[in-house]
Length: 512
Figure 1 (spheres, helix red, strand yellow):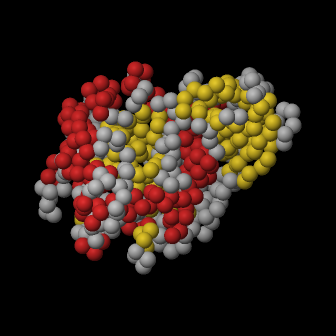
Figure 2 (cartoon, rainbow, N blue to C red):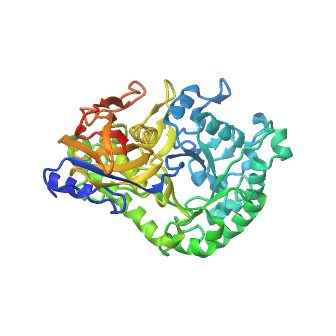
Figure 3 (tube, rainbow, N blue to C red):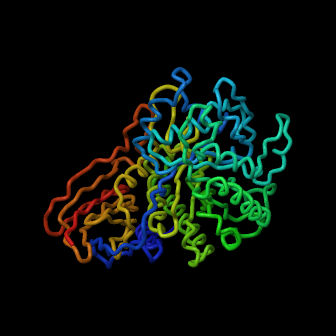
């Protein structure tokens, strides 16, 4: 095994040179920032993903209050506080979702079988309800359309009828949502258009052996894009660019052949499973070896860096107009989607470092998500919705909330930093923000701040730093990971001591 200090020092160096923190010289405790803007940070970077999961995880149905016939108030409160930039609806569910079944009088909507996740869905949450939810929590809605079931032919004929849908049906959905004069939407109680701008063509189209191959997928991408943009040229489309069918990443060919119709190319950050033979990230083994678990989670975050870099290289520098979209992603640990470590602060190092990676690659990464969204059984959710009691954020959501609420509009570079600190930096005007994860399990790291060409006049730090690495959140302990804010003294040589295993957002007030 690599010695802990050597491993953590190497981990801090793993980020790409363009915007990543660089380890300082031995004994140096200075975080040095070059404030020259490198790129605009996307307003869609912090996304959440909602999919009806049937009996596997009581997700969408669990968030609906049938007594008040509305979204659960505690759920709305938590999500509004989390303030996601974007909310995506679909996933594998989109392969058999027929959008017309989710509009009109609720009592007349047909229930449907959830073919992937089991059980039935009531369709009580349809287009009107989902858009209403997004407006109430301040998120931009993003829908996955039924993309000919991603090529999965079984949905063309089921016991319940045809569940696949073509480009014409997707185009009609765009019209229903965005045409100011659409009579059907008005008859269903929405006189104003929904103005849904973001649409993804299918979901995980390359995964498995029964989906489209690359040639089929690209051809249908062009077909769907033309039909949908004919109805509303202002919509922004996401095409699928991950690998599958032994063909490598589809992204480059997709962009070269269909790029004129697309605004984003998507992959999913899935399969982040431990690679060590002696892993403690299966079952409850981590409870006896929390420090090893922490180090293994850093290794898994390294894989996120590699995937993002691979996608950047595959799409090429000449296609900067098309953003990269991580429209799903979560930490995959055994037992499948239910490992209890995700309730605990131990998981924070993976989440914080992954979010920092996405922001450091923000010149290309424009949409990213770090977890599934809500439910009451899976532990890889951002928000848990218990059957009794109030909804609460998981550690991944608390970190996303901290970073999103403390962020600038432009990415800037970290020129050097003490070993062990993983940092993403940004700026708006005379303020500089740092998202800092102390990767060292046992050692606090003290650092001072320098912004080139400016004087640091003070600021503040909002930190999540539980003393117990196994601190956890639950329905009875909803605020475990609420950050604590501390002012930075306006004195020469402003310094801060980042506790071991902490995640912090630093705001620096600068005079240029």
